[in-house]
Image 1: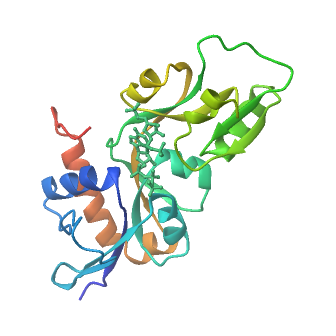
Image 2 (image 1 turned 180 degrees about the vertical axis):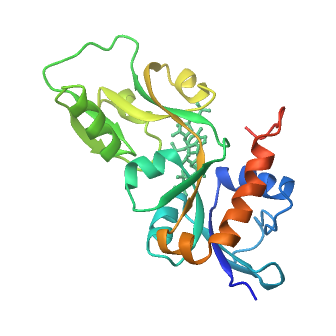
Image 3 (image 1 turned 60 degrees about the horizontal axis):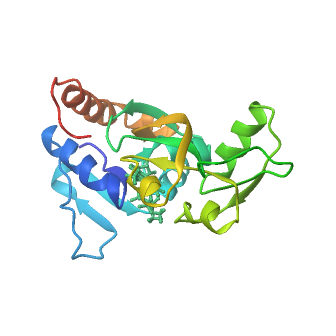
Length: 214
Ligand SMILES: Nc1ncnc2c1ncn2[C@@H]1O[C@H](COP(=O)(O)OP(=O)(O)OP(=O)(O)O)[C@@H](O)[C@H]1O
Ligand SMILES: O=P(O)(O)OC[C@H]1O[C@H](OP(=O)(O)OP(=O)(O)O)[C@H](O)[C@@H]1O
C-alpha cells in the first residue's frame, strides 16, 4: 500500500489554475472551496492529503517535510531560498517581476526601493552595482512611489493594469515568473514512484499544444 502523499497548495490566484491543471491530468484535487475554511483535506482513497497554505509559506512546509511536494510561484522561491527540489515548471500564473517607477524618474543621490521581495531586490541591485535602500512592504506596493516612500518599486506585473491606473511605468522586467512543482529532498527519494507518476501526468498535460491555462 502506497504512503499518503502530502501536497502543499497555495490558496489564492495560483490555486484555481493549479486545480485546473490537476483535473486535466486526471489527478484528484479538492474543489476551490471559498465556502469552506478547512485547511487540511484528506483524500485517502486517492492516497493524497492537501494542505492549503499561504503562498509564501509553501516552500517552508516542503523544506521541513511536513508536505512532500508543493506548488509555488518562482518569485517566492527566489525570495525565500528554501532548500527544496524544483521538479517542474507548470507554466501557470505567468507574470513578471519588474522595476517600476514614476515616468519622470531620475537617479538621485539616495535611492529607495519598496518591495514585497527584499532579498530578490537587494541581490539584483547589488549585482548591478547600484547602491539602494530596500524597504519591505506587504501589499499595494504601487503606493510607495505615489506617496513618496520610495522612488522605485520591484513588483509583479501581469496585465499592466495596476501600473496604468496609477500612472507608473515598467522600467525593466527582471524575471519571468511561473508556478513550479517542488519536492522535499527526502520525500523525493522515499516516495519517488508516487511523485514521479504525478510529475509525468502533469508534464503530459503541460506539453499538450494549445493548452489554455495561463
Ligand atoms: N498579477 C499578479 N500579481 C502577483 N502575483 C501573481 C500575479 N499573477 C500571478 N502571480 C503569482 O501568484 C502568486 C501570488 O498569489 P496571491 O496573490 O494569491 O498571493 P499573495 O498575494 O502572495 O498572498 P496573500 O494575498 O495571501 O498575501 C505570486 O507568488 C505569483 O507567483
Ligand atoms: O499587472 P496587473 O495585472 O495589474 O497585476 C499586478 C498587480 O497584482 C499584484 O497585486 P495584488 O492584486 O496581489 O495585490 P497586493 O498589491 O495588495 O499584493 C501585484 O502586486 C500588482 O500590484
